[in-house]
Image: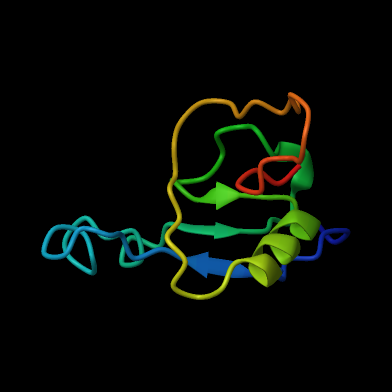
Length: 97
């Protein structure tokens, strides 16, 4: 169907939630619902709502994130845009650009 694409995802960050008894491997758990942070074979669709809840990233970005964030690091997922403007000083390390 898409012979020019590489269908091997580069990295997957598994999310298990952070509320014991509620979504940490419970009914609403992201890991059991297969909702992850991962690369994609279709980087042109980044920014479009084409997944079932996953956070898709450009492959190079997910490789960088995977290498920077140790296992067990809390990840907060928020809606909305991030401020990419640097108001002087060092970039905010929470935001990859």
